[in-house]
Image (cartoon, rainbow, N blue to C red; front, side):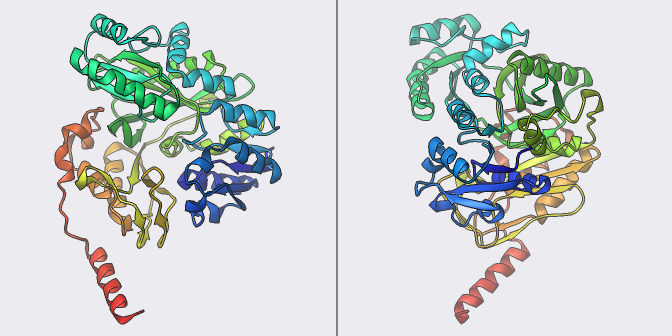
Length: 472
């Protein structure tokens, strides 16, 4: 069993992992930079170690993190999501230094991180993929020829890409010519590689992903699917489990594809297989995420399975504690990414001091947050500061509960996406559980919500003004 775990991450996911450790009797070790000296994950962990002044570079310093883990007496490292979570060299270094990496082995991370390699593996395993180039496109002329063959619109993508970066949609030959060098430049800057490939653009697809768990004893199971179709500029905003848009036959099909994909690469630990569902009802493999996903709470809500706990058991070499036949889903769950952004101002980041924070509660409500009253949200990281997850027995109840919980939630001092989500819940499409990846672009009116402050916010502002005037 794992006795002591270093969490090579920050924010709400680090707090989430600390909580799993507390329940399992595992000592947790946090790391932090200067910007995170007062972060919640530092306060919650059993131990915390400084990894340098640079806000981002510290969390990407493989050797420093591994050295700290060894010096602190850890026997395992959890990468969370983002940062080094899909870095094959990090997993390899942990293994070389005698640390269990909570995730798949380095070779699987490398293969699935290369989108061309992933496509080839899936094709060989009989998993359907999006039509596109056979490998990297080596020139603009080759890209133009492939686009002519498969038809516009097409997507130019970074081979080593992820997180919605290094992607450009091209409707015409002229757009492909203009975007070709841009995507190469974006890929080089973001991922250190200039390789790109080309895929057919699936029009108005549903983004469906399947959560899988695989142990070291040959067992692979799925925990059903999530619908991540509501996104802005390829960044997810709202996630739902299970998808209210699938038939049972489609659900069985996509979950079967996901299990086959995991088996094809000898996957171990928790992972996610992502698909696009086209308007003709066909699934197309998009990518495999070899890590814990931001949206894992919705799957936990409908299955009752603690995915982080399962990760730690698998990393310790234990067999899965569940069989596919015993995994049941119940009800619907919706997760809202609470981002420190101003939707009325093109979602401009809104970093700063959180003057008041109120977490919602009640039946079927869960909050994963990295903020607290008085916390200063630093400008160096992703703008997501909390996640709100609601669960109910059916879709209409889940939507109603989401509205109540969002209205209960209070984050003051910075702008957030909460008002935007409240407007989203009013749309007939969301209430009917019918949406695709074009939902946000099709509803620009959602950013035109009223600006009147709530009674509680006005009272807080007046009290603050009085206190300032009185010199308190």
